[in-house]
Length: 189
Image 1 (cartoon, rainbow, N blue to C red):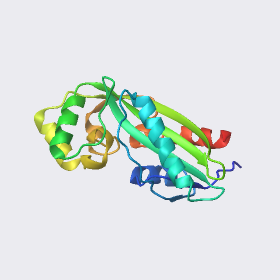
Image 2: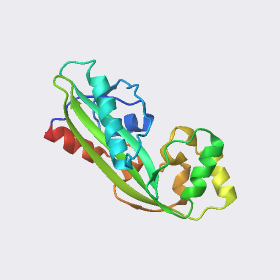
Image 3: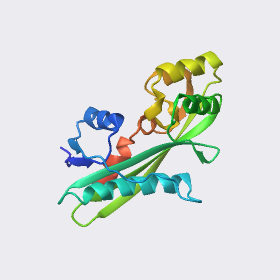
Image 4: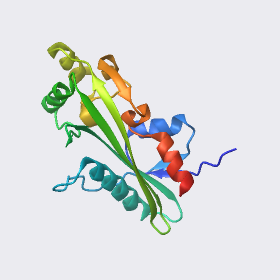
């Protein structure tokens, strides 16, 4: 038998909770409240790693001798962070940008031991190719895909699946949590 230690999930993401639950990982949620503003000249990779670490460390300070998992996922196209849309018009703009193009989904992962803030920080990268979409298809995804709380304004496991031609890398990363990377990092820590 393998030993999978209980985690504190420093995230309010329902998708991250669903992924942990689906593999039988015991966890409790404690959402971190941090400033997610991009820093000047910060690469997308550094951005997601920093936010994952800051979320995990902020929550870890409230516990003794616990493992805390922080994560941050973003969509990157042409080396620019797309992020989450602020409204439906912004979601429409994002989906038009993704239509017919490849983009990357980056997730920064941080596992922090609350006792001494010992940490491990990693990143998962997955490439996703959207089909060319008509204005009607874009509007369908904006109206029915619940885009507002999702990086890149889409959920791979929902309506957007109709328009995704190819995925290179970890599917679970695109959903929001590269679970095999999390397991590897917890095991090493």
